[in-house]
Amino acid sequence: MLYRKDPIPKGTANNRRPGYSMSPTTITIHNTGNPSSTADNERSWLTNPGNTRTASFHIVVDSKEAIECIPLNENAWHAGDGSGAASGNRTSISIEICESGDYAKNLDNAVQLVAGMLRERGWGVDRLRRHWDWSKKICPRLMYDGGKWTGWFDFKNRVAAELAGKDEGKVTKQEYEAMEKRIAKLEEDNKLVPAPKWFISEFGSPDLKGLIADPQLTTEGWRTLAIGLRSSRK
Image 1 (cartoon, one colour):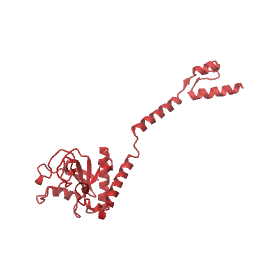
Image 2 (cartoon, rainbow, N blue to C red):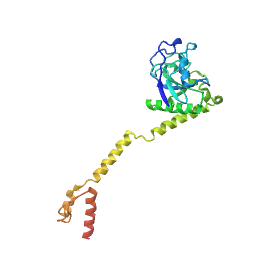
Image 3 (cartoon, rainbow, N blue to C red):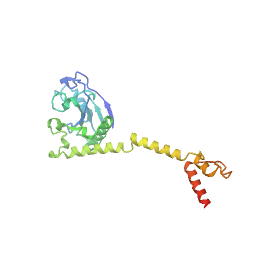
Image 4 (spheres, rainbow, N blue to C red):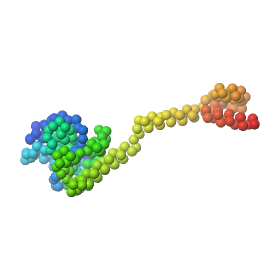
């Protein structure tokens, strides 16, 4: 999937890009509400002179691409809950999922996009919101399922699975440090060392009076040799 930035200009009609700075805390999911419009169409509509609405959004995604229309550190008017400091409009990144064309592919791309954004920020699916959560609008409408929101829960589960799948092969800092310790111990255990003092004290010399050509063994090797020598005395 292509991701491209095509921000609408500051000063776009009807205050669609107000330019308020934003430190987002959530990501809000929408459907476009237009069954025949592509991501490119939706981007173009934001700057179309015939568009008299104030509503705007950050990203729109379809089966081919995702387009960033407003920088993610600025707010957009998408949640329908006003302009308060804690409103969805001022705290949440909005993603519009197109309804046209191959909707299953649109959803696939949205899952990948959202999972990537969550991972990038160190967030989990608890950071996802519906338009509904801010202002009780039935949106994303194709996930509503008569109020059961089956599509929404399926979407969240898919995003969670994508997150888990991509993180599966990663090694945590603690796991890496433990692995380093195990490697260091293996190297230490396999290092050839001269006869330890206890061996010389018990058997008189490190080479057993010429019986060992190169008197260097691993620590475990010296222990094993000592056990064998003790047995031979019996």
